[in-house]
Picture (tube, rainbow, N blue to C red):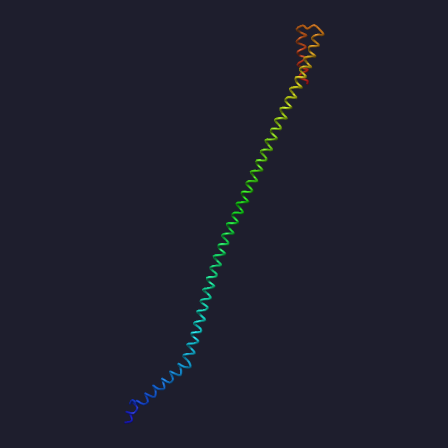
Length: 166
């Protein structure tokens, strides 16, 4: 019969084992599960907080990136405006310089034309005066003596030589 005791099921022993297991479960739940659960909840809350902070930092970084991009675009536009304004100013100054140079050149040309015209008139007047002088001298010589064809040709040749010398 001994072999039957070993194989047999003892109901009281099963109940006591179940009671021990239940008590152990309750003790573990009270002293181990709740603190571990509390620690896990605290860790979860900390991780959620870190995720929220990371999201806020990411959002802030994106906003700053957008602001910097916008400021950079504004700076580029402003630089382009400054360059365009400088180019326009330089072009206007170049046009003004060219216009002034043309006006000065036109003034110099007009002055040269006026001077040339005055010089031509003086030369003409000088030539007229010399012609009058030569004509007067020729007339005086013609009146001093009687003129024949040879004398006439000689006077003309002399007159031409005199004009050529002057």
